[in-house]
Image 1 (spheres, helix red, strand yellow):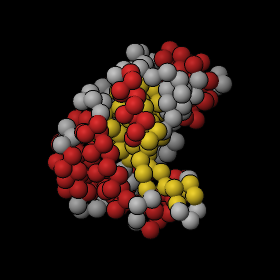
Image 2 (cartoon, rainbow, N blue to C red):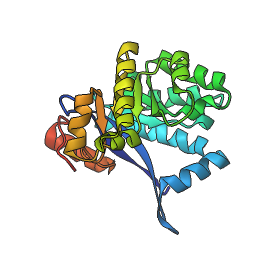
Image 3 (cartoon, helix red, strand yellow):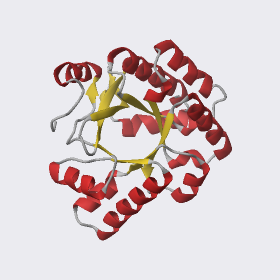
Image 4 (cartoon, one colour):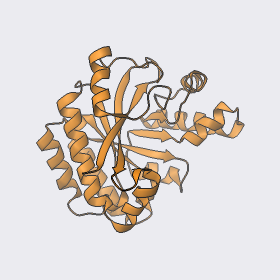
Length: 246
């Protein structure tokens, strides 16, 4: 009972209105204090404890969004390759949606390219079943793994998330990073996908990403990951419309 979820806002790049929140797992250990996800998530993956943990995250995030957020706000949930290989993954997802009452169109599942490194056909079938339910699927950390372009032929992603390393490189006027972001945006547009730029930390980076044509923005400039209670207060205070830099 030491796990909790924090939620980071994702905003529309043009209007800067909140469109979704990404659910992020946090662990405040009674023995060790705050434990970084960078430390405990890989361990959970290696031991396959990520499967029951991921099921809990899905249930908790769907319940939070359905019960406490406006109906136009989506929730993004990260799913591990280990979860997708489980035969009951889709059944667990259906149960989370059913018990929470969340409209499947309000759930976006985030995966990384690592889902294609093992049993790619099983992972693809699981994600296709999720899409058949009405959920959308985002490809996270795009461009940092293996053969990304080939994956875009295999699965109809709704969103491509541009890794923060490219955003930071573009802010430093790296020609390569700027070219990559422009290419990803153009490709996503032609494929009917949206793009989310991650790791935007200040007004200058936000303006640059808007200029480059990304659809959505996520990062500290628009809000850090926050407890559920802070999200409630945001909606109470602002109607969930706009965020000021955190």
